[in-house]
Length: 174
Ligand SMILES: Nc1nc2c(c(=O)[nH]1)N[C@H]1C(S)=C(S)[C@@H](COP(=O)(O)O)O[C@H]1N2
Ligand SMILES: [Mo]
Image (cartoon, rainbow, N blue to C red):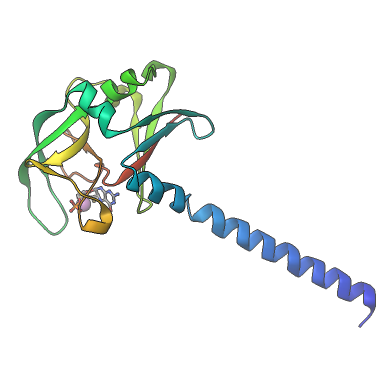
C-alpha cells in the first residue's frame, strides 16, 4: 500500500474514534455531575448554558415545606394516595430570583436519564407542580438507597404520575 494511503486511512480511523468518544461523552449526560449533585442534595438550575442558581435543603426549608396529598399510580401498583412534603416549584424559582415569565419550559433531568418537560404555564399553577422532599413523613432517600429523591417533582394533576420526576438533579429553563 502507498504511504499516502496509509496516512489517509489512519486519519479517517482516528477521526471516527474521536467522534465515537465525543458521542459517548455527551450521551453520558454529565452523569458524574449529576451524581455529585445527588450526593450534595442539590439541584442545579440553568438555561442549559448559563447557571441561574442552585436548590438545596436550606432553600426548601426557608420557603417552608407543607404537606399535600397526591395519587401515585405506577405500572406495577394501583393508585395509592400519599402525603408528600414539599414546596411549589414556582416558589423555589421565585426564591432564586428567577422570573418564570422569561421562560417557556422547565425541563427536569434525573440521575437515571429520565427527563420531563413542563410548560411554564403549568409551573405557574397554584396547586399543581411541587418539589417534594418527603413522602408519608419520611425523607425520599436517593436512587442508591432505593428511594425516589432526595428531590422528586410531583405533578398533582397527572393522574398516572408518569410526568413526576424522581431523583431530579437539574432543571433547565428554556
Ligand atoms: N427519574 C425517574 N422518574 C420517573 C420515572 C423514572 O423511570 N425515572 N418513572 C415515572 C413513572 S412512569 C411513574 S408511574 C412514576 C412513579 O414511579 P415509581 O413506581 O418508581 O414510584 O415516576 C415517574 N418518574
Ligand atoms: Mo408509570
